[in-house]
Image 1 (cartoon, rainbow, N blue to C red):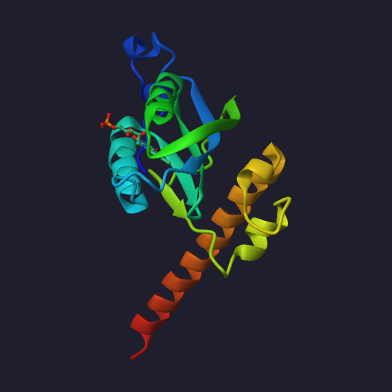
Image 2: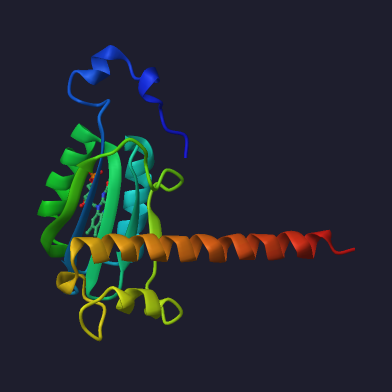
Length: 172
Ligand SMILES: Cc1cc2nc3c(=O)[nH]c(=O)nc-3n(C[C@H](O)[C@H](O)[C@H](O)COP(=O)(O)O)c2cc1C
């Protein structure tokens, strides 16, 4: 994803802290009574808005819970946080970590959807306190390790798929 370098940011844009990049990670509970709550719709809206706003991130969803990590200019992240808190497609939002960062972790993705599936259940439960994935029972450290593990695993799977495709095309 093409993101403006800090040096490219004009001085007028720095008046409000736009040059400071931060990452915010939170968990929330899915509101399954909201008819507009389809995750595909949330994801599409996030990807479209985030591309425009220079936000990158990852979203994990497992029927009951969301876990999202967003990175971007500090005022932009704060604007989004205000919207997220008011969004009734989820509730009980709890901030897991919020810090200034030197480098983005999700720089390739406007919003990467990471799915805790049967295949990667091992990861979701490894860092969980119970027998079911429940981020409310997990420490900040466990949550950050889970996001990292899922994203690394998914990146690896995608790389393998693209290499397989390349080898199919090179046959003959
Ligand atoms: C779990 C969850 C994650 C979301 N993630 C994002 C996001 O990454 N970016 C975004 O712009 N909106 C996201 N939204 C939607 C916002 O809460 C809000 O509805 C939206 O930003 C409003 O956009 P608008 O001002 O263009 O109408 C998310 C909503 C939910 C429930």
